[in-house]
Image 1 (cartoon, rainbow, N blue to C red):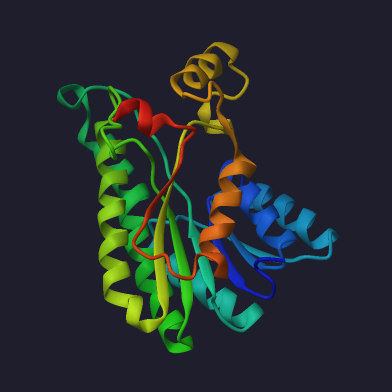
Image 2 (image 1 turned 120 degrees about the vertical axis):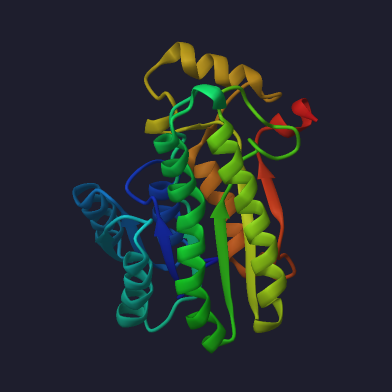
Length: 252
């Protein structure tokens, strides 16, 4: 029970890595606040947790909404008495095209969902953790935009994920003395509904980019998040932790 009695917010929790993380966190003893845009899917994940004798509540909304970030923290405090951790995982890839062809709308949306939402989440989560004297925050970044991992057509995505690593390092420096650890998790290709699930050709192509010649399951990435949120990583902060099946080695 690596996360026993810890109260954790999980964004992007309706499917993929976020849903897998919510289920695993609960199995490891955490009380979870689930966040995403789709209420029906959130209700289903929360129901699975609660039927398994875990504790989960959910609130649907938009992570780019400042009020939503605050509401999630308030819900954690109201239902579970505090906020011990957050897995800020929500994100989008956006349209894949070279920057000269990219619309401003696509750029703004990707930056807003992937990076501005992280700023809003941190601004809402850190004051409660600071008052408690402890906390762990994990943001989902990517090997894309890190360690020569830029991929064609992913300018907005790469910029947002590289910016997220910079934000994490700044937050870690600012709040280490407050007992708050802040780290980034950098997954490789992961089998999720947004990642080509059901398209064998896409999955095979992406799998073969990795030295391990396969993609991660969402649960494998969730296991890395458990480590960063648990006391086992108590001396880690400001780290871009790579869980990418060797992709960064291939691209280095």
